[in-house]
Image (cartoon, rainbow, N blue to C red):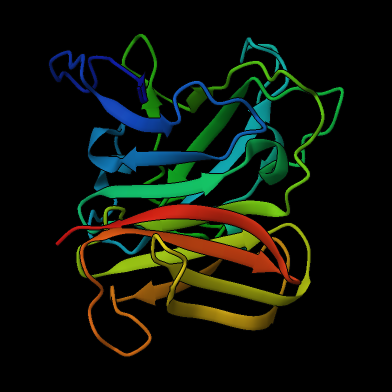
Length: 257
């Protein structure tokens, strides 16, 4: 079940909307060591964030974490600014923007600290000097306030050993076009991003043995085609990210036209 993070209020005289979803986190009960996807619906945001162009290619997340379950005690720690290359949220062309990350890695959380929640706003521009159409949620009185995304308490305080900051395919399922993106913690001499079918046959090479910089978001356009230039068939595929010869992460991709 996907957790719906509700920021419900009467804003600027509008009627109460109990279904207002600003951000949805998946999986629902993830902790700081789990890869999550945050999906933003700008139409549900407190103005002026709702004015962000729903057809924009990207939005930008400005965020941090809280080291206490109560946001009034601890919030906005280990901030990742919106101008960070890894802070890009990928748009689907219809007002929804997504970002995938492992919180402990993305925010450099180390023991004994525990990230109990994510604290965020979003913007239409990455420039730190410009905050036009800053997007927030609602508090209990209807006023605009920072978005708080709660995390489960982790079973272990050990930081994840993976190099992965995020690996994403948006949208997913894919019809005719998607953006494929990833970011790694460290610099790597040889990075590959490839798509395979269910039996392990190589379908599409996106990146092949390239040297890349750590904590930078790399984004590629994919037209749902194979290496021969033809359209791939409907079905399940696997997007595999490798660094220096080792598999870092694999994500399931569903093609459904």
